[in-house]
Length: 185
Image 1 (cartoon, helix red, strand yellow):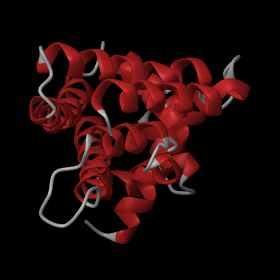
Image 2 (cartoon, rainbow, N blue to C red):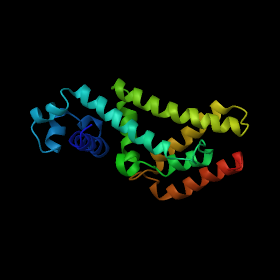
Image 3 (cartoon, rainbow, N blue to C red):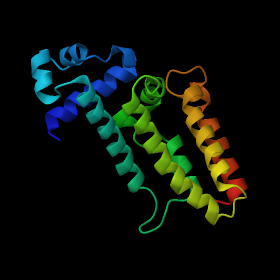
Image 4 (tube, one colour):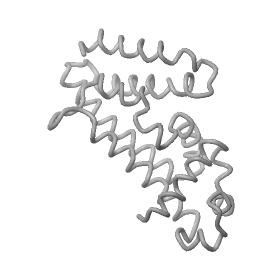
């Protein structure tokens, strides 16, 4: 993908994070990038093509960050995975504490976004479930879903600009303490 396409998609991410997914149209995206609609359509012929590229870029950023986690040749621990989510490892690039609530809403009307979220969470779920199995969890799948729900929900309540943002550090430490006590990390 060209640098220009990446710049356009980064602007789309910022639009969604700042103004909501309803603000993302081809015309608005062209205007935000300082170009005419025809110039944008040179890079992305249709909205669907642009959304597909956007979904692929978000998935790629998360996969790269996720792949770099853990130790060489080993799967990440439960705590490392929790820190990855809680510390918002790709947050600076994807503005994820503002982007993901919009993506969660957008998945209701955009099948591509729904597929993206399912793929991202399925990959994370598989690794987390394996880590829980290694720790001897009674019900690794259920525990993985509970942990994912707790960690993802944290951003809804304590993310940037949220009512309980000032409690974010304490919530992070409480979740990590729970993981340490439950799984001995």
